[in-house]
Length: 440
Image (cartoon, rainbow, N blue to C red; front, side, top):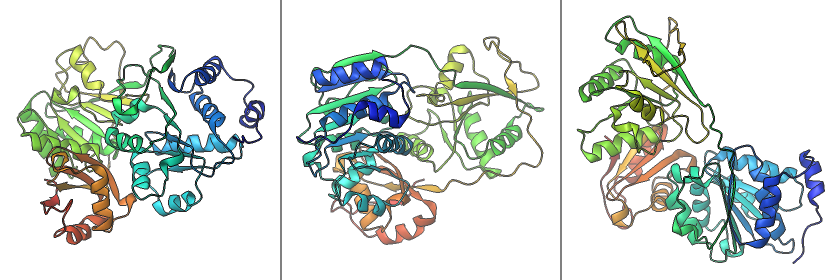
């Protein structure tokens, strides 16, 4: 096995780092002693360099195949890791694969197999299906920030990808939080667990308020959403009728939104949440039913249209944002007869809504409903293949895919939806003709 001519000191010099820290040294030592490793460490602590050095020790310069794969939850993280590895100047080829840009560019980069691939689960699964990535030589797998990948709903893609790696010898999982169950499909066997979490919580949640002149806050809510722009927001109301009235009032004023409460049938709930998750709607109006247990990442604003009944409700509502090291803002709407709840210890920052606000930019995505799901042996890879082949869509025109037991939701770029529907209306998915239409 021929290693490239590099040294850790040269790598540190290239990265302008004086020396490895305690966590990085411990990770290298544990990697020598075990094939499976779980590394828990705070964001910004140097996990990337730690696992890249572990990978580097296993790479063979004479092997023309891809030897290591890093799966990450976001394109930003993929780009960051690729940049760090290139800066290390090891002589090994690396490329990253993620949604949001042309797949053809990645296909060209994969023609000559890179030693290391960094990618998001969906895009890596797509390249494996198209045989652009050859899995036979991959012996090292890193799941970086695997907790976020699980929270973002990538389990199925991750399971498909890992299932295709028949020659894995080493698995490294990293996370900045410890309360995550590791699925069996990862295949860990007696891993060494390194815990370097500091236990310090980030102060990521900001609390602000809007004072409304009228007891009916709808006009103030409309102006607030115009002020916030097209960022994702959950509007909490205390009762179901308030949810539907508020949702209808926003639609009348030109704000696309979906609503969610306990009286809806399950398909209606699933449709509303799918549209909000995939960016077809940036605003979800809901009761406190949505304050627990929902897998909705990257929510920027929580708007307390009706003030929460108590501190516990307030905490659970706010738990929808500022998650997983993301920042978020909770906004209280204070009517003329209302006061800031006593359990809020600091004075919230007052938002002064300016005159002359314009409507936010409309979402670029819309949601396709397909009446086939897991029970029909349909998975996300099948849906992507159907839409790219029969619907002539490019990967960048396909957003989040949510496969339920008996139906699926797919985000499609709005500008492409009409033509796509015409192309696929008489086509079969998995040799079966099913209802396909814009989600209601």
